Every structure is written in C-alpha cells, then in structure tokens.
Image (cartoon, rainbow, N blue to C red; front, side):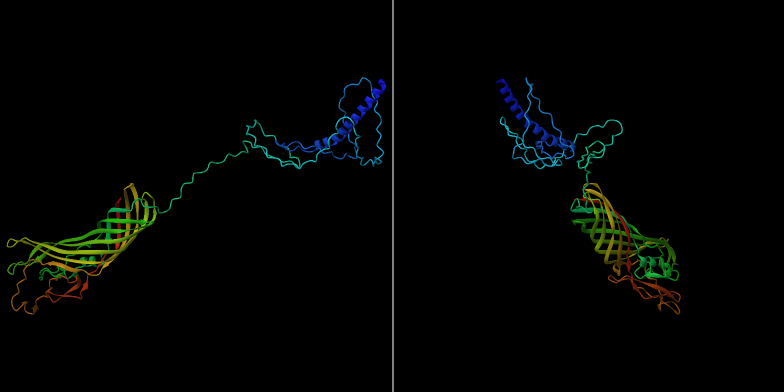
Length: 468
C-alpha cells in the first residue's frame, strides 16, 4: 500500500517537474540573446518588456537550465519515460527542432503565454549631469561608441560655456534732436570787412573827387588847386560789428528768425592848406582835418538748417539770410582852424547822404551749452550786397567868404574866373568825377557817375544765447 502511494506521488512529482524543465529551456535562449544586445537607456515610467522566446540556434542546441531546487525526498523516485501522444507528428529535421508541447498538468495553473512585445518607446533625454571639477591630470580619452548607441556628451567645465552677458546697447540718437526751448535770444559781436572798392579808390586818388565832398568845395586859389583840396586818406577798412538775434525753432532741423547788426567804418586825414582870408592879406597856412564816416545797419530774415543738434542745444547749422536790407549813412566833413593875429576862427563844412539796398549772407555756425538756459556760439558768414546809389540828405557849407574879384570879373587880363562848383542840393545823387586843370586855375570836371558802395565781404561773430 505504501509502495502504491509512493509510486503515485513520484508520478505526480515527475509531471510537475517536466513543465518547469521545459519552461526553463524555453526561457534560456532569450536570456542569452538579450545579453548580446547593447543596453538601452532606462525609462522611469516604462516596465521592462516581456521576453519573447527566440528560435534556438541550429548549430548548437539550447542549454537546459537547472531545475529549481526541491526539498529532499526520503526515497528516490524514478520518473516515468515521456511518451508523445499519438496525435503528435513525427519529429522534424535536426536542423530545425520541432516545438515541444507540454503535457497537461492536473495540479497547479499552467504558465501564461508570453504577451506580444510592445513597440519600444523613445528614450527620454537624460537630465544634464552637474558640473564637477575634473581631477588633476590629463583627461582619459573615451573609446569609440558602439554601433547604434546614442552618444551623449556630459557637460564639463571645459565644454560648458557660460552665456555671455547681454551688452547694453546705447540708444541711437537722431542727428537733429528737439531744441531745448522754442525761442532763443542772442547778443552778437564780431568783425566785418566790406570791400568798398570804389569809395576807397577815390579817397586815395587825388585826381578823382566826390563832387559833394566839402574839402573839394573849399574856396580855391592859385596855391590851393583841386589836388590840394582833395585830401588823400587811407581807405575805410574792416571794423567791429554788434547786433542781436531772435529765432524760433520751428521743429526738426529748421529755425527762422530776425537778425539786426550795425557796423561803423571811418577814415581820417590831416594836413595844412593855403587860404585867403582877405583881399589885402596874403594867403595863410592853416591846419585841416577831414573825416569820412560810414555806418551800415543791416536786418536779415534768417533761415537756419541744423546739421546736428542735441537735446541740450549743442550742434552745427547752416545759416542763410533769405531777405536782408542794408542801410548806409555816409558823412563827409572837414574842419579848418584859422589862427592869425588879424583873424582867428574855425570853419566846419559837412555833407550827409543815405542809401539802402537788398543784401543776403550765408555761412555756418555752432552752439555749445553752458547752462540749461545759456549757451555760447560762433558764426562765419559771407555777405553779398551792393548799394548802387546814395542821395544827399543834408549839406552844410563852410563859412569862408567868397574871394573878392575886381571888375570886369577877371583876375587879370585874359584870365577868366574859375568855374564855380555849386553846393549840392538835398535829394541829389552823390557822384564822383575826374578833375582836370585847364589854363592857370580853370578846373573842369569829367562825366559824373553815381557813387556805389560795395559791401560784400566776410564777417565772423561770437554770440551769447539765452534760451526761453
């Protein structure tokens, strides 16, 4: 009875051991194949895929895994030989072994078939490793990566490049910024040098005279010819100019305003002349001084185009006098101081004339701010102007009496009286002419020409500007 029980228990144990042995044989081939494949990056969320059985190698049959350990039996049990079922086909060729089917097992659940292998999910990039200080010594070169493996270069202090700080880009300033204030008022002073070619030529040349010159109209005699009456003086040269400017900043690079300036030029000469005081007194030598004074007042409607200007008011500009008017005041006078025991007095004669004309100027200038409301600047211009005509506004004759001439209105026989040059009348044009002497004391004037004033020339100014 005990032997029957033992034989039955041994048969049951054999039936349990056979499936386990077959499962170990089947699972052994995938484990060996998996060892030959390169490792893949681990995934945090994915489960390890189930192992799918692979066909065994035909050259070498799969090795059998050792059976799981069992508790020691009291008596050895000899397993019964396995007999294939009648319906099983004949064994196949050894080059491709036939699959082994497991016999049904009464006790215990059968192993579940392997689930189909899911498609591998793309490996997520591994987080960057923290930068570590490499050990001293030369770096060990890494071997070549395996085929098909994903190579990732861990950042190191040598390969890690810190992002460069963003450079602060200065704002681009426009060439012409808004003016600090809308209105400006300037005090101007400088130097102006008009050409005055015709006038200076007459003042230096004694053969040419201004017909309204008080020196030329002095009483004449044989010792006081027109060459003596025309006092040679140096020409009128440049001089200081003063003025004011008021401008409005119209927005952008444009500014408009008014400019007023005044200029004074003068030439003075001194000499000694011979005069008759009375018919019974011989001519006497007396001192004389002459003055030629020219005043120019100018008004311009100006346009300024700023090439560069900052918001503080510093910049450079072009200056154009769109419309300008120049007013000229010419004064010619002479002073004769007679000192004689019989008669002493002073005689003054003067002639005043006025003229005006259109003018313009163009140049460049600049400003430099000293305070938010005050700046200093400079300007250089070329003035273009010519006054074609002057008119007499006032004439004051000398107080010398006319030289008494005996009858019949001749100095001596066959010597006629000299031609009389009449005093200028107000409103007449100021003219000049070349004088010639005919006979002993007779004088003749050539064709007369209106006296022009050439005012073209350079001017340079500095100015103090108030912004308000």
